[in-house]
Length: 242
Ligand SMILES: [Ca+2]
Ligand SMILES: [Ca+2]
Image: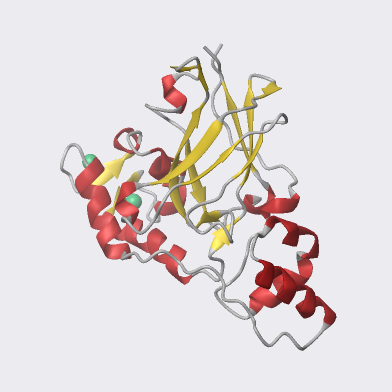
């Protein structure tokens, strides 16, 4: 039996938000001493340790750069893409075609009219650009029913209206159903702030074993942003099986 997808917070060491927008990142590194093993950049780790020990790291690494995007263009493009009835707004039914937009709907709908206009969408996208946090943690756990789903590929695809500079992040679930998302910059695993549609796939003998509503016709969405309660504690999806 299919169960409704859900996103639930869970504790996760790997899911601390990384604040690279300001000098806060140094203190974030200090607080994240247990997490440096998740970073693959040796220089980065070395500097993290030196930062913990005190002054003296003269080669401070740079943090991940935000993808380049234009919030107003995103707002306009979202309307062009999803405003099926042409009234200039995206209502809840129209937003079903954009799982990432749908999951963020109430945060975007500033005037509370149950519809999103280009300006509201642009404002939310602008937040991604101005937030101190660049990336939030990409720890994901997938359950099929009540059991962890192993061997599945989990892909977070940025909604198209965010622009081509946004690229997907993905990972493969282990025996505990846990995956760690990484994108094109493997030195900084996690998710750039943004809206995503999520696809969960597991192939066996050339056949997809997960229902289409979770991959080719996915209804799963996720918004990565540092102003969402518990966003730093991990992402969880529970899916039905065929
Ligand atoms: Ca409309
Ligand atoms: Ca509105």
